[in-house]
Image (cartoon, rainbow, N blue to C red; front, side):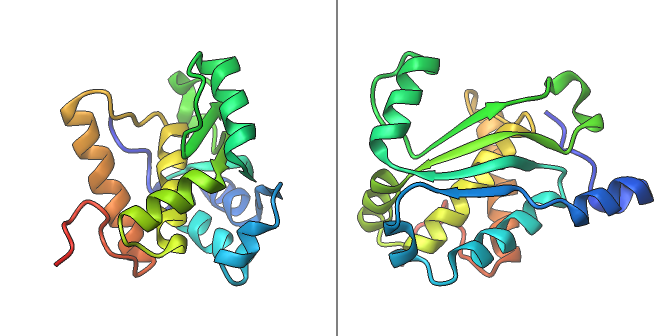
Length: 172
């Protein structure tokens, strides 16, 4: 998959839309606030980095393992929680015409557990998964090694724009 156009190659009208659009942020569990100070501002910072690649969710839902497990079972036939689920609203074939591409659901307990297990700050892992979900909405995937490498490289580049270390690089 080729990357989406950078914001620098968008028309003035498209750029104005992206700068004025703010995805809805739905917080279904108050524990999210305990782990990330100024949670909504933090999410907006992450989404601003994502929008340079035309990948904004319509809604970002900070949910729980239970809710994500139900959605994962209903729509993906996988009856377990996962860290991030994306639901595309627009077809990828005409992605250059769309900048709001779907919804992102994030599972609190899974993200907390993964951050702890990898010794990474919760907020850094959350930023990574928001970017990961946004790239899925833009049509990126990781089913094949080449796809996974391209997606990981873009994730680490976008995270670096937030001064967050590359999650794919082993920590010393």
